[in-house]
Amino acid sequence: MATNQEILSKIAEIVNAVAGVPVEDVKPEKSFVDDLDIDSLSMVEIVYSLQEAFSVDIPDDDVKSLRTVQDAVDYIEKAQKKA
Image (cartoon, rainbow, N blue to C red; front, side):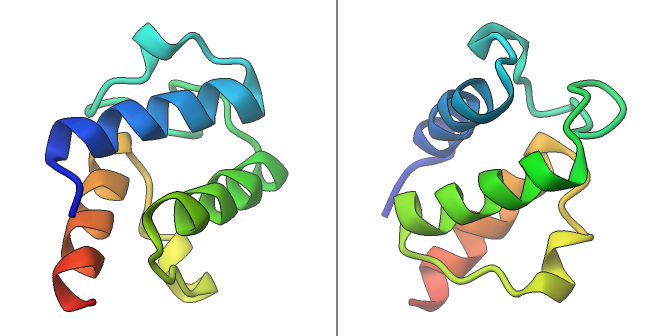
């Protein structure tokens, strides 16, 4: 199971790969849409990559609740504990 910091680092790598956002700009308090300019198509790619990277399932209904980077970290941590 990945630690909070490992999850955050991987999210930053994925956001950088998908949307070209510098890794150092991906911080827990940042909003995917408002701060990082992630559009809906890029968000789908990010979610898919997170599912692959952490072996978790993120249903479409839950994607709407992932507004900030911290939301994604918390979601993945919780999903890993259930697995």
